[in-house]
Length: 153
Image (cartoon, rainbow, N blue to C red; front, top):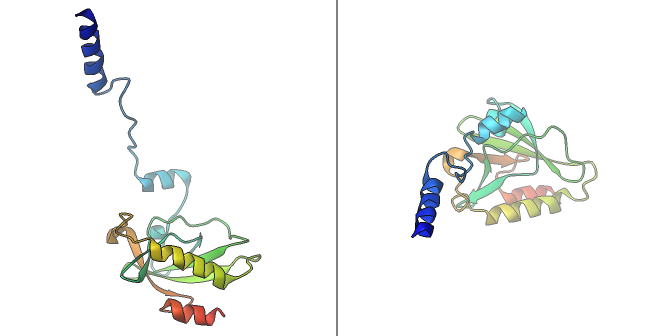
């Protein structure tokens, strides 16, 4: 009987708020954490302001391309990858200019990989709701992937 009583006390103590077994709480938002690091995201850009991201944080819905609002801006350019110059536009949208790093072998191949992966990342599956993403209006002035790839031959 004594053993049951000790077990019961341990279980009750574990369930009490503030007990030693309590779960660690993340009581800061991602934006607060980003600000504490001195980092900026696409959503921090003013309308018509441009920032650089190293790599894309893209998803798709109904064959349309989106970028996550909280994607971090880069402090320096990639040498071997694609740098995305993102300009924030009115209406929760952006335009993108894909610029190759100075040692990138093929912008076209890198863009094919970027958009192949993005086409498999459905925004709703990854809980990237409309309030958490920007519409991509154009990439390098193109409004479709086939037009963009035609320009990158």
